[in-house]
Amino acid sequence: MREITYREAVAEAMSEEMRRDERVFLIGEEVAEYNGAYKASKGMLEEFGARRVIDTPIAELGFTGIAVGAAMNGLRPIVEYMTWNFAVLASDQIINHAAKMLQMSGGQYTVPIVFRGPNGPAGQLAATHSQSYEAMYSAIPGLKVVTPFTPYEAKGLLKSAIRDNDPVLIMESEKMYGDKGMIPDGEFLVPIGKANVRQKGSDVTIVSFGKILKTVHAAADVLAKEDIDVEIIDLITIRPLDLDTIIESVKKTNRLVIVEESFPVSSVSSEVAYRVQRNAFDYLDAPIVRICQSDTPYAFATTLIEEATPQIKEIVEAVKTVTYIKS
Image 1 (tube, rainbow, N blue to C red):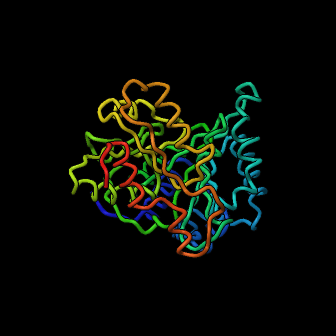
Image 2: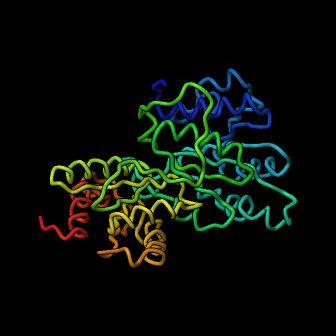
Image 3: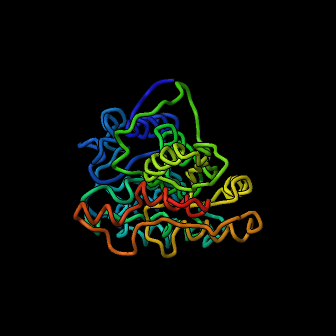
């Protein structure tokens, strides 16, 4: 085992897969000469050259379309966005072409492509640079959506995504690129479609994903001091959703709190809550509680950011509500 950063895990995954398969290439803004906006492609231009590590203009729709066409013709592109907020411009290619081509061509064309970049709030970046897009893209048949939390998953999931024959969207966070974690020394993959029980508990299940898990773990530590035993499930993959792992946990704890950084309407937590009540209603001893970002555009002021995003105190109060413990 060895310790590396999240960005190093991403770079290792891409480099290893490019060495393994000459069809794999990286394309995006500043991925080559600048080593990536967040230095997640450091050293790759020197190793693989400008034909396989390709700098693009600031034209997300254009270079995404090029990559989708390349995937249809047998290559395996990795498309990096500076932020998923910018990829809104490319959503036509992702949603109307990459996601649908297998079905529209009657199985004649696969689109083995990876779209990746930072997602969600990351400090004082204001409304147009702070949105979370997991729910939007996970609503589209034909797309797979994953949210690696640790360097181990960042590397293993990216390698799995590159080898997948379907379009895979990887939602990272610029606030996690410097996070450190342990990974195995040799080759490893992390399967797409499998959630992870990050902490076992018996009193309440918290389902979450992405960097907000840091806040969830901090809340669980507070609750542990009050003898409330929290089980934490990291979805990791938003689509396809690992419902079995969630249901098994709810059968044990009989209570569910869902925490995410996205807006509450038509959210990932909405879908999880529906599926749990549909498939495990008889096991619930309390209503399901969702904690999301406030239903407003994201703010710039730090005081408003704190009010708008899930906080430790809010998660603690939600858990006490479903366990019928008064503060």
